[in-house]
Length: 354
Ligand code: GLA
Image (tube, rainbow, N blue to C red; front, side, top):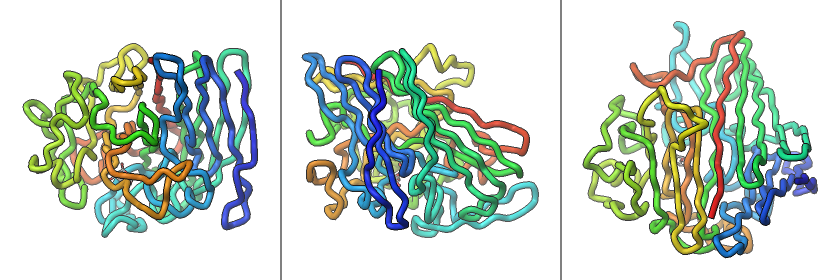
């Protein structure tokens, strides 16, 4: 195991951005950049040992700065949407910057995905780590409280990326930290993901409106295209006449895991298999939900991916582990509030196989 550090580029503000490559076994390797605490490459072997880069992203730092899509980044303070960018906390009203129609998305104008994080490297025999940290000041993007965040990426067991999030605040605030990597297990440059087989341990999903803001209802997946409790191809029920899929242009929903008394370390919440290469992705998480996104907005011709590959809709999928979007505005939604003196922690594991 080893970590290789290089200069990746310089931001428009003159900050130097580095890349960190962690190498595991059988050619498995992960490259991170400190801009956005982003996952830039994941090289994974298929069943014949052939390597492919299974995540989307760019060759140039300026594309990470300018493009939307949050490729590979950590999003925050609040992943996904907050309706009208408004909420009330301890009797006080807050208004956030609205960057998605009239709503707040993924942390606002300059969210955590667009900042250069501090970096610490820890190499050890069997588990190399890159620890990114940042301080988000009180009032940042309209959010209360000084938030101190660390995101640790650990390459464990030679083929497993373990992402551990920690945050503290000096004033009551809200947060929803996630990672926005777009996966394609056949290789990011190999076409759509509709034939990937997906199992999702989710029995409900958060209903959203035409602006993808939660309506407040959490619906059962039973007898709908949202049901992945029995493994099926992502595209099998990709039926855009089904209202929730029609409104989102595909899958873009907060899927709610089946029970809360689950041991996140022992049983996976998602298993994805790409039949031709045999590559698999198994996901474990301590969080209660995942945004399953079939990359319906991934179609910007001005921002080709690595090697010049044109980005196209549904050529990747995201499994963004999370609390419920807009949760502070709905009774009965998962808790996104963090108080002074408390520590927020969560862990998500992406394990690759073949
Ligand atoms: C999330 C959202 C999507 C979209 C992408 C970024 O997954 O749920 O609607 O905004 O981020 O393009």
